[in-house]
Length: 270
Image 1 (cartoon, one colour):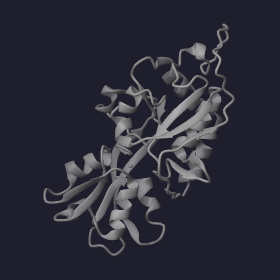
Image 2 (image 1 turned 90 degrees about the horizontal axis):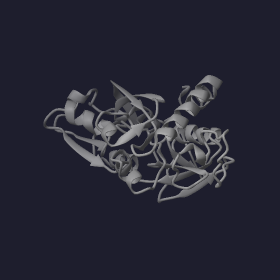
Image 3 (image 1 turned 45 degrees about the vertical axis):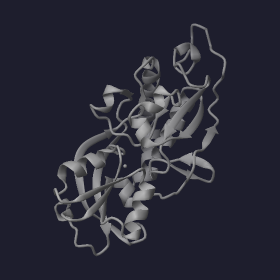
Image 4 (image 1 turned 135 degrees about the vertical axis):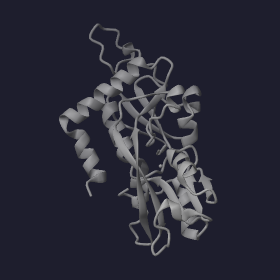
């Protein structure tokens, strides 16, 4: 998006939830000379010793959603593997996207890492540090099946839904006709409910998320936009040098082992 700057799976979750998955970490710092990047001696400055606390705006399938009492999705499956490689427990906290992309959630000491389909931008890099990119994204325009809207130029006099604080919102503002009404929503859930009810005429957001809304045949992708966006895992700018290095190390290991591709294919192979 800019978020997401914003799936091939669909799930709906509500409320704020805190879930943990086993990762083999320890609350005790290892002060030995052979300390690994995942140890407290590594200077990771974690919110909770022995656990990697990952904040995400759920749901945003296929990147993050709740299924059978567990948080999952492309972003969170990657982060779970990263936490395991760092020998840490894995904890997910559901927070609003705007608080993540602005850095407020990190300033409040809520998160170690933000994993929420967040596009790396120069503006965000003024308040956040990002991992190496892990996903290349496209924006897209979702419309009802049979709609006369075939491109962004057709939105004159129309209402287009976007998620606030995202690159999709920015793209709509920069490229939609001047007389188009851009309606911002807190999350994809509210956006999708609005287009279903006829409250807006189109949705502009990340392609995989819009694809998830086409599965019942009521909506279709009218247009895709190459925006050269890349997602990164976000971290605070203060005292996170070793955490960023450890996340990047594990991300590279997942690519080298083929595990990254396995996770990618499970969500995007089609």
